[in-house]
Length: 258
Image (cartoon, rainbow, N blue to C red; front, side, top):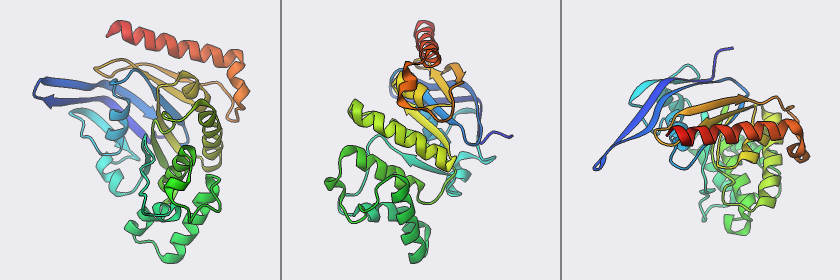
């Protein structure tokens, strides 16, 4: 199967008044359809930058990057992905339904199709009955679920998620991790997920990409042997702990090599 996303010796250098900043260096990575891939590493290692390159929001300065066999810019115009940011980014003057409807309005869907998609995506993230609520009437976790629904509303095959649960408390985060894993299992989307949490990366992923400090390089790629259906208590299993140790070793090796 051809990769959905393919990076070959990808480089990105930002030019600043203080000199060049090497955000990504020689990144080689293939991501296949339906994989859940987490990116973990210290702050400033290029995790979010890689997602932004995939989204066509940053332009690499070297190497190649394809999304669905196209350039990232072509894939963006083809609406190949949905993007969920660290903050929910919901417009406070729009209802939850109105926020989810926004990309559908921009894309020119019919009124009937907009209604159907809003209803279906709200059900998908367990927010039935909240269409007419405003963001300030929802908890932080519910707002993030609404943000995920908005990204899913136009049925893109790729979902890019930039540390969407980082600001939430551990109890809410655990519940959303379970819900996201269930959502992935039902939709079979290709997920790219940025996190600073080792347990979160191991619990969610079929593949974990460990990155080193700037310049952002891949220090390890771990294919998870865990089953697709994972209860939270799998975090106590020997297999889970072994993967977590390997992630931690990769992070430590990256720090020492920097």
